[in-house]
Image 1 (cartoon, one colour):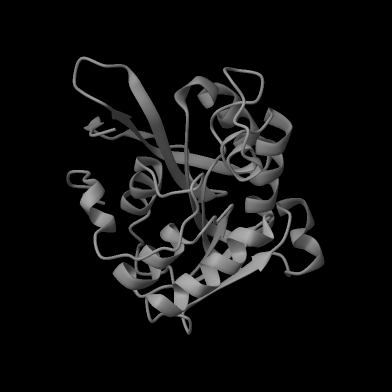
Image 2 (cartoon, helix red, strand yellow):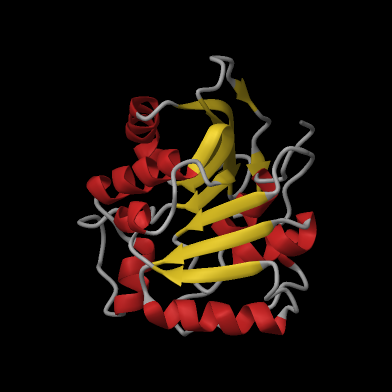
Length: 223
């Protein structure tokens, strides 16, 4: 897998209907960039799909069938409108669902790939946003992130691919959670604002029951 060079321009031309407190970020672009599929990936599920920017990009850029799972009904409505706006409502659909409840809707190992931009500003750190939508989208305790990971393992097939983006300050915890549900990290990449700055985001990619070989890709810039 030749990852090339990251650019937020990967989302150019992807249309979304956003709210004041929920808009596409560099994390969305980084996730799409690092999720370039291998030939065996046809179906994808996104956990925490927001207004749909990642799902839209995966469907349009890589011709994938994508389902988004989002707990906030307001964002699901906007995402469904956005799918029509992008002309891909036949390739993308969204469910108003808590990730904890995926077993009520889906059979195990339904998808080839699962992706997620974890809520990476942990609750209790820094000033809390007055916007409910922003709080739910951008803050979570570690137990919530653990539920995302458990649901991911349930939803992807054996040897299926996962790609997650989150803050490096929870990297060791996330790696521990992943190992508990047999999700093996095989690649990792850090995104910095500038060469002399500390990393703001990390992307991890691997497989369910995958081999224990880890590649750390070259650092990227552009937060």
